[in-house]
Image 1 (cartoon, rainbow, N blue to C red):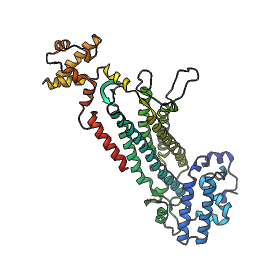
Image 2: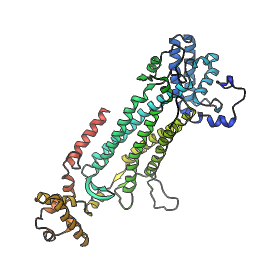
Image 3: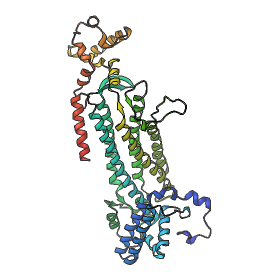
Image 4: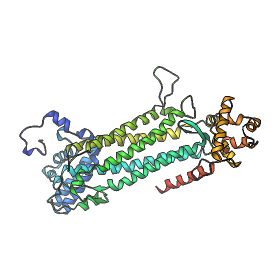
Length: 459
């Protein structure tokens, strides 16, 4: 069959141009969305009397047959037909005859592709929200098991203060909660219908755009036809939210890599999520967290790529916009896989509580509590800070930790120190002392867990 748009052309398209400009290699993933949009359009055309009702019914029947064939992998897409839209229309004409050519009445590929992407991204955004909630549920489950597990908290990757392992994990719960909120908010802008905007200026046919929007579950329509076909903000927004989500996944992945190292041994990752070395038989490499960390750059690239494509584009549609799809599809695939793998990693990992506790006993992370102890003895904090700094320096020179100094040594530093200092320096006391809202004490962590669980119930 000749090109569906080939009427004014006298030459065949150069084969290299065909291959270079075709998008069917990647946009075929939107086949079901394209057919859904076409069924809604054909329904509306029949209802409005723009085409005969019998023709509309024949078109819809043919489209449903095509959908079954596509789902059963019984069709072969053609580069000559360029994209998913022309492929399906061409197949439809083969399936039901010339009546299939009436489907494109009152629409353009410009509003058709925009509609497909809105439908596709709506479906995928809702799926990703569900996957985020699954990770959150697993984090909550793991955190509930480790409210009283003490680990070193870090700043600058230096031991800072003891914290509950549950508290540390829940920090990622709230990062994901914000990610989820951004995706949910973006649905308001994704769920708008461009269908009926035509190529750029609308159509001369008395179509009913709100009817097709209703049929496709859209909450509204674009009010400007130029904006409808040229808007890619919703994709940029999706990529931006995905980049931030992957940043959070990358941060957790980095900690999993560090924690599972021989130097830390805080956690052991399940064999199912690790690989071995081709030469070193003892190795157990945390390849999945490393790849999650690495794939973050891939999503960043898609975001920057689309922003660059859109920069300075005049209204309305331009072929440059074909470059909006591959990065979007790749990001969807990457984010879906990353969230699914992260769920499995967290759920299956073993937590080495004794190693974590051993770590907080062999550092100076209780120094702040030593200063707080002095403040309670009516010494100004800045002066207390200096005293503790000198105490830590003395302990380091003596190759001792703060809990190992004798009361005599403490008295030599400052006479206000009493024997109760040892209880104040105990890791459990230090952790439980953080009673401020959002702190790491057991009471606050349990309250945080309650709020987290309630937020999941309301999702």
